[in-house]
Image (cartoon, rainbow, N blue to C red; front, top):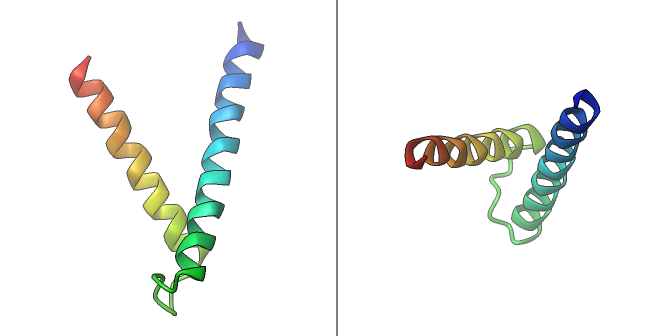
Length: 61
């Protein structure tokens, strides 16, 4: 069971990282990202999106 749980957490983290990188490049190439912002800001936006999603899931269940 521990291996399965670790795999689920690792998969979620990897997917989250890929989503953040893609979001950063999309915003950067479309010039929607402020010049002062870097990857960390986009990563924090991704964390907030994931947190809101989890909150909605908790509220609906």
